Image (cartoon, rainbow, N blue to C red; front, side, top):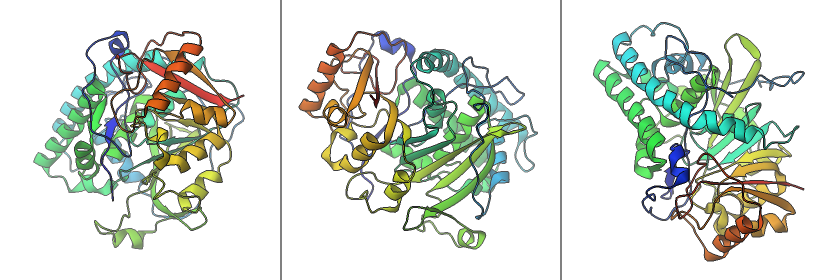
Length: 419
């Protein structure tokens, strides 16, 4: 059963770091997801903005991640949806879709994205780049991170494989082809309003996420494709998969997909391959997995946990995750992170100090933390530990918001890493 959760988009209002109205209180949460927007390549006729400090080129001498064979590839569908909904690339609007409607959508979307790139990405990217040591794992795990490829590419521009996990399914990429003219306009309008709301408000309710996941422009796919457009990438492949018992991936073939029903969960887990235009050496992979991460659904014997453990050392990220990693109900995924992370960036919803210290991890703080934001599974012990952690560390200003505000509407961020 899917439990209620609140879903933050990366906090986008830089001014909020300096004060302002506190965010409204939310209901208690279970699992979380989020989305945001990153930097881009040069402008194109489809409206891609330009951002400084954007995704970097692959490290010299590092081969792109290999692609396993098998499965039906929906690259053509992904590229058309990329053009229509995310306004990426310079190709003409695909036949069968009203160009005027798409161009109007892209014009409005460009203004929203340009502001976010200017206000958040161009501030956060160089700041975070200075914090990271050389040689971090290029395999990145982002629990409670659905829809947030955009932030992952800001934090880890040289990642090779990103695994995001949330309660939302990837979604059927083919669904947009069934949109009539009026439906196209309304669905693009809905996607645009989601971007606007998330850019401005930082939080999104379960109801909105569930609606987005089941529209004919699925939310997970849309926000992933929008991240590509912002960071200067384009889709190169899209397959759906599930896990074998040993945690290895099995891609779904055409006959399985043709038999898919609404209850079959065929489109829950997706693999999106992307690269810079004309540069296969820049290839990266996003694997989004629909999974409840509480201990009832996530044990050491689940195929997903076996898949994660097989990665070995990883880089990690989480934010605005309803403080679920504070809870003993999420101890399995928390223990996994504590054991396998080399370097992790988070807000206060990341690994609590008591777990970090017991695992021999070091935590560095940025910004100001007076107490947790009123979302999710908060406990007084971990809240007090985070206050002590920030007080014990040297004060380091944070010029942007990363995930939740604290209780006094201050921006804050934590880097957790091995000694």
